Image (cartoon, rainbow, N blue to C red; front, top):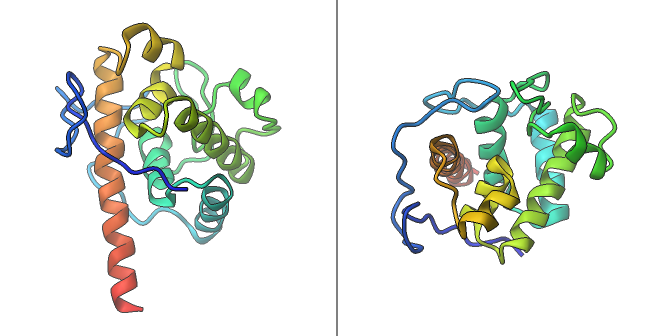
Length: 177
């Protein structure tokens, strides 16, 4: 089951329009690139596709999360201590059975498993799952939706932007094949 992605205006009810953010900002780990390059090297591509299939998550969405989180740098570390491609916090990584957050396979498997749990917790609402992935579930519950944090809103905006770009890349490849 792949969750349907519907962007929402972050200050209101779900809409089919694009996510709006005040100012795109950098992730705590890295500055956000303006356009994702095809940086998913074949080993990452294989790992992403396998983990996405296992946890029934759109692989293009996982690629977008990785782009927003670490720009495909498996050694990325945020100011808050999140590590690896999917920027897992050490406590979260441990709870997911991730042994080495800097190992791409371990990190991606744990990150996709965690994102799947968030999707389930928020009834398949991708926007809320992304907000929880970035800011924490407690803030999504506290505010009854996307928290009013500029960084979280920019993060969601960027993930949806990258998701569209990765979907377009897949569509181009499918047309050629």
